[in-house]
Length: 140
Image 1: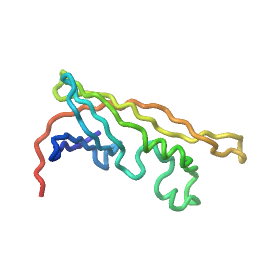
Image 2: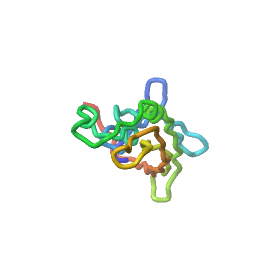
Image 3: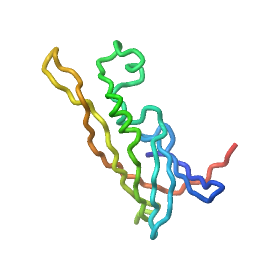
């Protein structure tokens, strides 16, 4: 994860957002619990990492690539996965946490020319998140 923004809304809730261009574009609410920061959020990109097995150009024109799109059920499941992590103070300064995230893949059956995508699976990955304060950005 690279740049992120922190905002507080009129009701006093704190939002943390990792915008497009990060490995995962996501937004969520941050609450403080016992000295730790709890994040609970959702994916914000149309085709987030791990939720599509094909590049955009392959989805638009499947004949241009050797790609088998994920089944719709896998995409829905991937997009709906809860994003939760706990940030704790780090000895290096800032806060550190780990996000468990499921990356989805097609399952294949058959051999040679008969090989085809059938079903899907996911693998849980762990992404380390280090959050450091930067200079406040001014709105233009």
